[in-house]
Length: 206
Length: 100
Image (cartoon, rainbow over all chains, first blue to last red; front, side, top):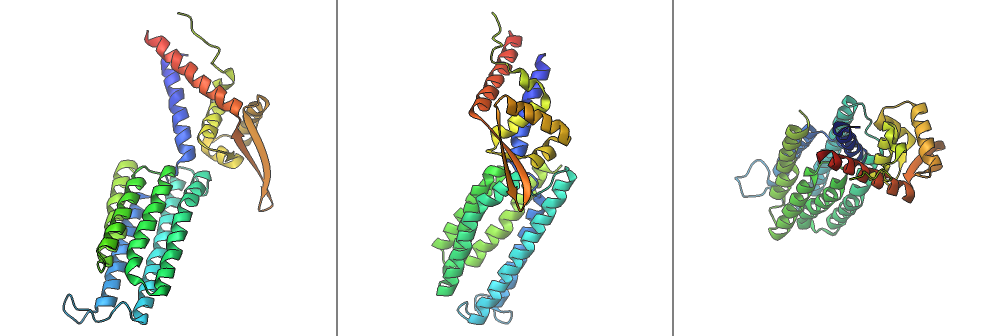
């Protein structure tokens, strides 16, 4: 065995360890699309709250209106559902191209890692809404989402960890500056996803 | 200088066995079908290589049922992990040797 063979063998060991423990089928482009979707959702939410008639800065409605709350919840859920469908189907397509399935031990580990902070954050927000503490919803969603990304990052691209930390920071900022929830929400779920998606796409998908 | 080949493990000369062990080193356990998909080998090839690792005591087999379907998963034993680490050291030494 000469040196080239050994180096090749070590390379194979490395790639197998990585391939078997990291889920790389997440599509960068789906991140971009999900980010755009979040921005559209935020824009719609803005008009629901601020209305279309009045000048900037004056709200037609207040978030305390029960009808407005329901509209916002429905918008958020719609964005969430379409994003999940988009993310999963594009990951499926990407996995198919490399001859893998998306339901494998790494994707299961990824979901398990994400589930605890994500479900906690979801329930936390539902409780906040039920108690009428709307001002904290945007920041807690961002913080818990960031935590779940940081937890999941062990099983996928390293960039996800950075994304998670940035989401947490934005969540904390949203907490410090109440009333600007929608701004931080658009930055976190919109802009950050788009930037992250472009980086992943450029780095891994060419 | 003499080369210490006691750490070198002949069982890992086979590419499939080396890769199986790499996967088991990076994960707590892995099931048969996922191994097959990742390694892109036939059932028979994979099964016989897993069998030989099992016989050596490097791999632990756990059979269970998931949704009434049989599921076989594999994990490394302490002995297997040690052997793999030693094998890596041996490879490393081989490289160092050739640099001299």
